[in-house]
Image 1 (cartoon, rainbow, N blue to C red):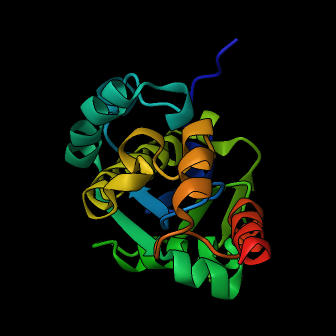
Image 2: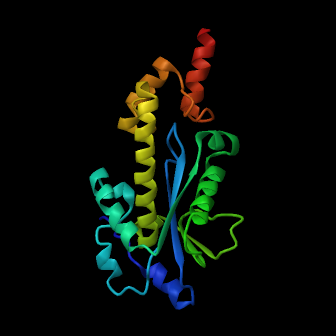
Image 3: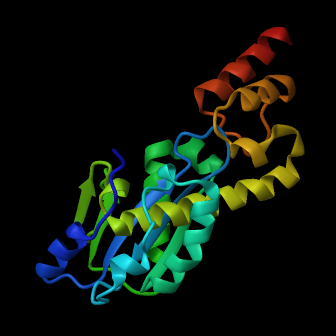
Length: 215
């Protein structure tokens, strides 16, 4: 059964005295190429029709691309503040995917026009951030703020990968967005990695090692 995100976590924090609660989520952690992108959203919890205004907003993975793109403008219109943060493939290779994801989240927080006083994340604590932070397992399926952030992150990253497709047309980024599909594996083996691939990821390392053995 599909679980639908609601505002229970947000209202619990509001009742504890917090006013601006930011939900955070990321897109692209498992991809072989491109950045990891984080979204951050603060919702107006004093709006009586908030849940109805964001009807349909849920974990981005449970929505079609068309549904995500349709919901994004509504989220941006309703939200008190929304932001995104990127960590590049080079930063992922340098720091590792989890630290890079946290870096993207901190950048998303820094981009918010309103300073949050509490955070909700999808399972991930954010070391170095002094705000109260509640990591929620499968948070994008439970918290409407996190679900909204997941849509912002996913749509933003997909659009970025579409742009990369124009720069690197051999790799099929328009189709697979950098994830490990059969097509991506095939073109990676055929052409080798390009400058936006994550050179530290095992499938890319395997291609590099294979080419080195044949050299």
